Length: 227
Image 1 (cartoon, rainbow, N blue to C red):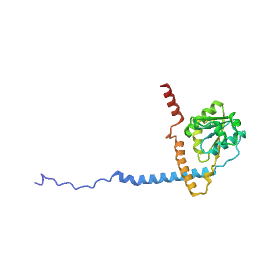
Image 2: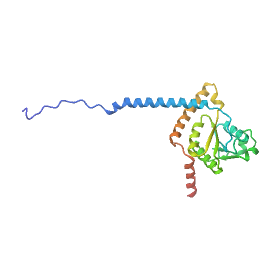
Image 3: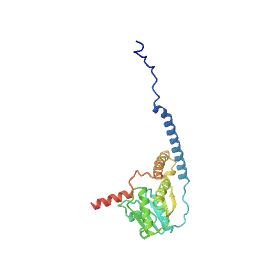
Image 4: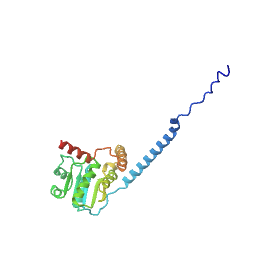
C-alpha cells in the first residue's frame, strides 16, 4: 500500500509578487521626480525674478508677442527710439486694427503705419515663433529684440531659437505691475501663473507639442481651400 500511494508534497509558500517589490522603487522614483520638479520650478522663478529691463543695443527688427498690454507699449517705445527698423506684433486678433492699437500706446497711428506689421496667424507661442521666423527671413534680418512678459520669456526664447537658429535674439522682458503686487491673492495668482508657465516651458524644451501649431493650422486651411 505504501508503494502505491506516495506522500503528498509539502506545501510551498507562494512566490512574492513582483508588484510588491516594485512599490518601494516606484515610490522612490516618484519622490525624486517631484523633488527635481520643485527644484527646477524654484530655479525658474528665481530666473524670472532676476530679469530686469535694461538698455538694449539696436537690432534689425523688434518682435512683440501679444498678451499683457505693457508688452506692446514697450515695443513701440523701442521702435520710436530707433532700436529696430520694423516691429512685428505677432498673435494679433483678426479683428484688431492698427488704429485700435495706436490708442493704447504712446505712439501715434502715423508713427506706427510706416514700420509696424500685424501678425494674425499665430494662436500660441509656437505659432508666434513660426510667424516671426517667416517675417524676419523675408526681410533679411539677422537680429531681433524680443519683447514679452518676464515669466513668458524663457519659453518664448526656446520656441524662437528653434524656429530661427540663425538669428540673434535679444530679450527685453516686461515685468507687469500685478506680479509685484503685495496682495496675497495677487501673489497666489502669480504663483499659479508661474507654475503653469513652468510646465509649458518644460514641454517646449523637450519638444512636446500639446497645442496646435501654426503649421498644422495652415495645412488645414489649405486642405479646406483645395476641397
